[in-house]
Structure formats: C-alpha cells, structure tokens
Length: 341
Image (cartoon, rainbow, N blue to C red):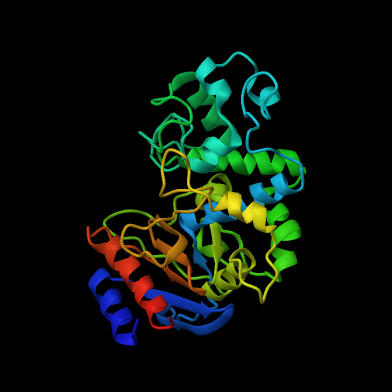
C-alpha cells in the first residue's frame, strides 16, 4: 500500500488516523501512521499509538485459553454449564439440557447454538444493558433457547468469548488483564497491550481519540464487560511483535508448542473459515494463513499472518458504515503484504 492508497482510503471513508505495521520473517519492514490520533490536539498518528482492537481482542482470549489447555489446567472438551461444568457454582445445575453440552471449544469456534439476535454484548437492550457478563449469560441460559444443535452451525457470538474470559479468570484465579500481562505478554516481551477504557478522560497517554460515524457513539461501552470479546487496545507495532510468537517462524521461539498452534489453527469441522479464535481460508486472499478483523463504533482493526512469512496489521480510530468499507479495508491490508512478498 502506497501512501496515496492510505490517504485515498482515509479520504473516502473519513478516517482521521490510521496506523500500519508489516513484518517479513519476524522483522518489521514497514511501520507508519497517517493522519491524526487526536484531531482536536492535531496530534499526528504513529505506529506506536494505541488503538482499540475490537474483535482482534478475541485472539488474545483464544491464546490465553490455549495456554491453559497446554498447561493441563483446562480441556477444550470441558463443559461450562450444568453438573460438573466449569460454572456449576455460578449458574446451578437446573438449566436447559441443550445448554449443558456447550464446551470451551464450542465458544471458541462460535458454534454453541446461540445466535446474536440481539447481541447480548453490543445491542442496546434492557435485558443486557448495565449487566455483568455473568448476568447476561444467566439471562441467556434461562430465557434464550439455542437456535441450532450444539456444535452444528457457525454463528458469530460475542458473549461466548466473554464467557471464555470468565473461564480464564476462574481457572487462573487472576483478573483477565492481569493474567494476560503476567502469564503471556510479559513472556513475549510485550508491555503495551491493555484493556481499554470508555471515557476520553481515562485514555492512556499514547492512546488515540476515537471518532464514531453515522450517529453511533465511540464512548458508551463498558470495556471491563467487553474486554475478552472486544475491549483490548494495542499499537500496530506491539501487536505485530506479539504475532511473531504464534507464527511458526524460527527467529522468535513460539510461545505455544507446535501441536498447540496446530490445534488453534485447525478449521472447525462445521465451518472451514473459522478455527479457534481466528478466521482462515479467505475466499480471495489465499496467501493469508490466519487473520481477523474487528470493528466497533470509532474503530476498525485487521491483522493477518501470511503463509510466506509476511504479516500485517492496520488499525484505525474510526470506521465507516459505507457498504464497501470492509472489502476496501481488507484490500488495503493485502496490498501491504504484497509489497513485501
């Protein structure tokens, strides 16, 4: 992607600030920001500014789950609800039979049987607003029947990842962010990935201001509630360095064993384009080994692990609701990788 490509994209979709990082064989070959991290202060964007990750947060959660599996603290086949389930104490035994068979793997693969209509994490709804993850899940368990048989059908489900965040906290005895920082990030030399905050007044010194479009609000979400499904913040450079520990390349020893990575990157039996926390088998960009996008109001994120050792990250401090935005955003990422094949 040339500077012109980036600026054309920003102009077309009214993006104040955008940040790129590209690496080849675990070396950063391009890192740059364009536009403004803070329009009002005329603060120029860099590749070290913190952006909201939205659903790129899910890969942080998936990695933490796979770490607990590798350490023998958890099994992908462990059930979450009902007698003997991870959360038997929290939700009791007397729940619908169909819910009792949901496993850790089902939530990782988005095939728990529940669908997001409405989304318990992001839709304004009196049944969920102002509630904790546990309270939202309790409502779902007793009031929202599963649409599909467990394990049969892919249906993207944010609440499932928030429940996986609760699994991490219960198994480890640590807060989600503390667990990530102490047990994973610090061991990969990562110091600048965090759970975000809602208010501008709470933002970190090197964090962007986020600008929503089409009447949406960038500052009306409880990041403590959405942390495991969409609440993390990071810079493009820091996110790229983290990816080097999960990319099978030799320079940085992978954080997880090869057999654990193989499981994480194996497509779901019922949907070949999603594995454990990652999208894969892109229909157009066949050089992408694994990737994921993320969007919430005021945020667009995408990263990809390339099959040939070229990885890329793009983060924006706004997102457009024009129909072509997502496709053009992915094309911009692919252009970055193509430059360095």
